[in-house]
Amino acid sequence: MKNKVTIIKEYTKGIWQSNPVFKQILGMCPTLAVTVSAINGIAMALATTFVLVFSSFIISSVRKLIPTQVRIASYIVVIATFVTIVDLVMKAQFPELSKSLGPYIPLIVVNCIILGRQEAFSSKNTPLRSVVDALGMGSGFLIALFMLGSIRELLGSRTILGFQLLPDFYEPWLVMILPAGAFLTLGLMLAFFNNLSLHKKKSDNDKLIAKYLKTKTAADFVIEENK
Amino acid sequence: MELILIFFSAAIVNNFVLAYFLGICPFIGVSNKITSAFSMGLATTFVMTITAIVTWLIYHLILVPFHLEFLEYVSFILVIASLVQFVEMFIKKVSQPLYRALGIFLPLITTNCAILGLALFIVLREYTFLQGIFFGVGAGAGFTLAITIMAGIREELDLADVPKAFQGAPITLIVAGILALAFMGFSGLISV
Image (cartoon, rainbow over all chains, first blue to last red; front, side):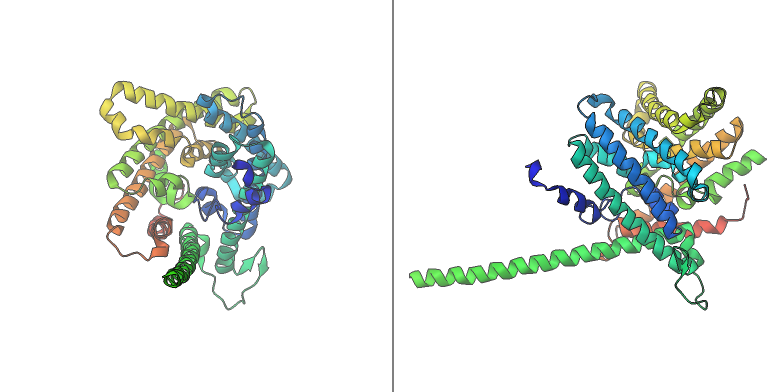
């Protein structure tokens, strides 16, 4: 049954169907904390994806060697190793970015998305599938962080990725770049996506009912004819 | 005096949950009931205090003398995970009622980013041993305060007529946003 899920599906599910932020509500701490601007969001998401992909690969490769009792500890050691790599590389190559993300890069270690994917997926699947799944989740995370970061940057300081998009007479909403703005924006975004899926569910149900009604009359028609 | 300032700064002005977004997972997950939220807060405070002590000792007595600072994250997270395990076993042996009250929350604390965040902040801000302890206790108190207030609001919210799309996580986040706005009133009170 597992093989029926195509590789492509494995990738796309992370983007929408089980988007880590919008659908599973995982990895909230970095999501809320770093999305003051779009560029921070992108950097955070890329760092997380890097860690996620490589730890998924390593863990799914050695999944049969790890005893179940100590699996969480083993996962965390693998994840922490890759986080250290990311942190050192960022400090050397992008000191500015590393400074603005502050302690949130090391905190990728305890990001529930990464540990959750190891526990739910990599520990049961082949390395190829795990890497594809990790890339999908990473992309979903990137989309979520970019959206949240863009909205907050646009309303809070008139810009997206440093380009001014709103005219000068627009007074920036300071609250958007403060902690409260993060909670409010994400809450409204989640409600918006919930609303979308509720509508989709409703229209799906309506279609099903319409179809059912049609077949019922058809069945009745057939029965009447038989009489 | 400085120690008291650090305590209040961590507890109220720079609240871990509402200003640094640390520990959001339990903050949203375990804030349905006041009693369980308060127990979670206590358990977290307890682990935070011990973490502050142990990670400070490890960083300054082992990692720095041997120039192993790059092992910071690996060693901290391992220490926290084993510490939580140890605390769980210890409480189970010593006090059954306390174990029953905190029991289910203890394993969750390992992945609470507030704990690792605390250890990292202590290193980052170069706190002394005593300052670190006060910072840990203050952060724990702040977490308890935030999660208990949140649980109180959510208990009332059960009776409210929330639009369908907002039910669950969205309304919780919006309430948290309003709470963060309220806590902003404290900003500038202490500058530590």
